[in-house]
Length: 131
Figure 1 (cartoon, rainbow, N blue to C red):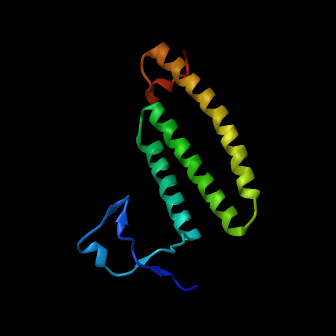
Figure 2: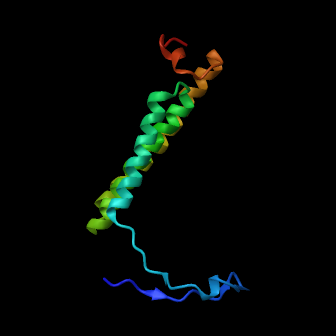
């Protein structure tokens, strides 16, 4: 598929551009993002979330890292669904987001209860599991 080229507009946000940029070469206007780029971003988000779960001791940061991993999996599912022209992945993501909302409510309630009892939100306080 040939890439379309278009001369840049001499106006930027209603202001006329003068100088070098007005006489510059052609600008690429048709750029598509492929499946590989979506999967790379999904992998990076998942790796960042996994790093947060493994390296951190604060429960809130671990919880946010778990949500980041879940959203990375959602991005991968949506991208596969988009490039296969099927809605199966997007429907699955809808249910995952619904379950994640319930998970957030229960998880944050547990973290708040632990913080109120022990005045700390660190993982070491969960070793005995006694309130």
